[in-house]
Length: 500
Ligand code: NAD
Image (cartoon, rainbow, N blue to C red; front, side, top):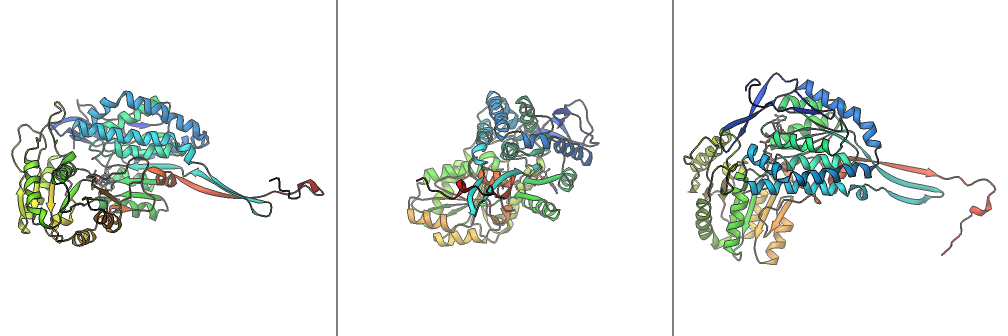
């Protein structure tokens, strides 16, 4: 950790203003393609968290009473600004994360789609009524905001994951404090500046930075009503437990170990392309990345050979200057080492390294090539742990039923895919695979803005998932009103009549 110096210090957003953090400690933000330090991020703790929550609490009464259509109009203006700044945002994501520009563009597009969804929230915000639920009594239910909401997000989607949360929370009438990953704070700061430009009132959206102490100060703050978390499973579980123990609403999405079944009738070329894109895209650092390929029956040998050849032909290199690398760097040198160690582990457990991505790369970027590990068994650590890098394990299955059983042995339950032309196999897979988001002939079955991100098992802690209508449910509470209407005494004109 370094003290602030000549490199730009990332600021925070509180009460509608960009300002300096109260933090004593700073961490370096890198360009993973070059290894260069590009900024310093404050590791703010209690003081920043308290100031941000206080600004959000102050803005809450007025914002929650602002008509929902006016709240949505902020998102209409925001969407235009995001479109105008689309390329610059994508370049920023590539610079601080290392994914290719095409991947960053896709990420920003997915985020804008959530803003588009949020523009339509007035229609989804409507309540429901039953007139005359009892004699002269009407019942209705209306949605109300929950209050100050907090978002805590991971490094692997610097723009998209934060955008899963705050556009929906804000149009629902809440105010928000975002704590992005300290590894990638830059895109979020630009997103926040653009939201202020869209006339989002001061205090409605705030950003602070930091690690665990900052997160815990936010969760523990008595004025915080709801917490949205996306990150690794141990932290998701801890955040969920801490928040719910304090009586707060928590949705916490965790890690993953996604399977990809290849049936004997699948088109091998298509399956290999989809597998490689799913396993090695974003350097394998996607919660919907495939990390276990499950060829069924006789396709295994040919699949492993074709996949290894495809992966070996991928160019791995810097993504920030030229658009020609197929795969960029990993987030930090320590992560490169951790992912590389999983190959040693696989080797020691008796798996066969069909393609080894460990090699020297020019420059100081944080690179590791794609690897394919064959003859993995479901009980091996390499098959059980989330590696979160470009390492694809291959577990060979004799039948579809065996492939489905491997899924049941996995403690995660985020995503899974099948490639097949057989409707029965597809249906069996859809019904019985033990995960919340499944793809049939789709390699990365990540739900778009209109649908919830429905991880199961240890990939999610809580009830209502992020995005889509579940997002609206999470960020609102319902109030039922029963109203008795008295008849004026002696008024016979109010006796029931049927005018049909
Ligand atoms: P992480 O869990 O290390 O960090 C996530 C956030 O939590 C960051 O903002 C970080 O500052 C904070 N944090 C870290 N340690 C903490 C602690 N002990 N207490 C409180 N807060 C803490 O995750 P990451 O490495 O940034 O991101 C990668 C992980 O996120 C992977 O496991 C990936 O599968 C997961 N992920 C899941 C989804 C999903 O939808 N399920 C989406 C994207 C990423």
